[in-house]
Image (cartoon, rainbow over all chains, first blue to last red; front, top):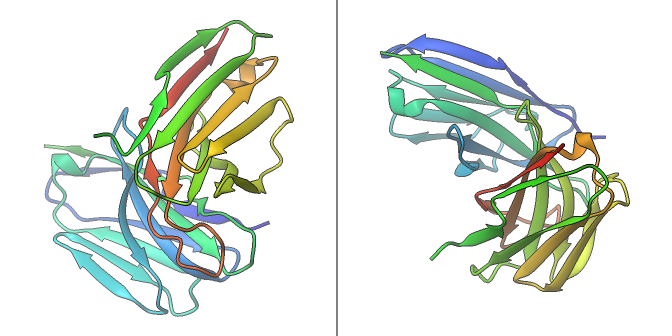
Length: 112
Length: 117
């Protein structure tokens, strides 16, 4: 079945450093979404990418969708303590009858 | 107004018991889901309903029985609870949920933390 792999599992950075998490799917995706879950909270939608090679920015966050629509990345520039949490990618296969499959997430911790 | 609400937020129970978790969404969405998040934070799809109809059932033991009385509600009943059922269960909804269409974002409830002793 479809698998979505995400690395790294954990990342600790000093405030002000950059952070990147990578997502790879075993199958071609029709779209990929990114979510953030704060400690003790629930996943909250950040963005959706649909087009091959698409790049979207939200302030310090940059999201990319690979040309083959099988991989994606989230890059945070100059991390802040408010960026702490677990970032999940979630891919939707282009095969019928499937649900959004989540990667295992990357947990980011930031020290000031 | 909470968009996706789940009750209860916490459940502590003994092995072998039966329990239910309720979920309601007021977003007018057609599709609702149950996800299970284990202690390692892995979010795994369990069920998906579109307009009260089951469309996805991901090899979940038949001790788990979802019920959707209408498209705004999706409840989860668990029989004969086991230790391995301990997890956080998230309900979610989206405007569409079928592959090949734009799924749109998932709106998650706050989660129901189930602890089986």
